[in-house]
Image (cartoon, rainbow, N blue to C red):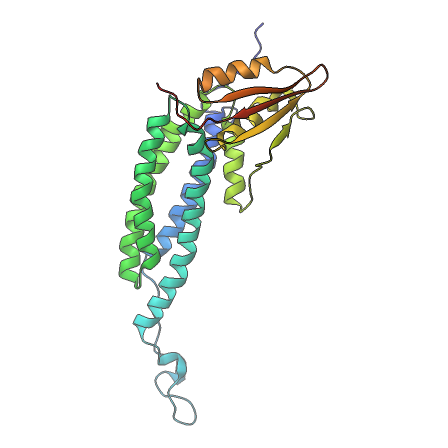
Length: 271
């Protein structure tokens, strides 16, 4: 009987693409809901209510709540709302770029896909900047609609194309990348330590952990892997996933402790 640990049933929560897609979908739906608050009409200030409407106070002075114009009240609401929405969108874009996009950018199979996503990201950034600078409800609504349109494209490409491409890479890199993505969304930071000791890590989690750390390397960056044996299978997976795009240098060769310095070269291999 063959082992089934690496076999996943499509359209179930055991499939890493399905699970990752659910995370991505939830985040985009949250952003969509935030943008909807800017697109829908904002409530305007009411001149007054009850018996005091338009009559002023006991001294004959006008009620302070009635002196602010509807335009200024709307602008205040728009500024407050757009600031929060813009911050959430930028957090999402940064999280995606530093995890999912970074990993795919250095794999031959998905490099062009990420290049296309980055072109769309440039356009999206311009629309987000316009939303941030919106000074009235009409401008905010128009900018929010443009942001939402481009975000819809991003969602479709990430969920339908990018996630399956990442799942196909050796090393089971998708689950830890999604975990990193969620960490950044929560305002946390990623592990950028120079040494990764996988000896206390469960065996099935070691390769994904190393590949996820490699995905965050910038050109010229390195980290040192510490293991209790020579990780030859991991080396083969690196050669399959990133041929010519990584460095592998033994620092210590056992017998009880092995250390390998893994890096990303400054040059891009020819494909």
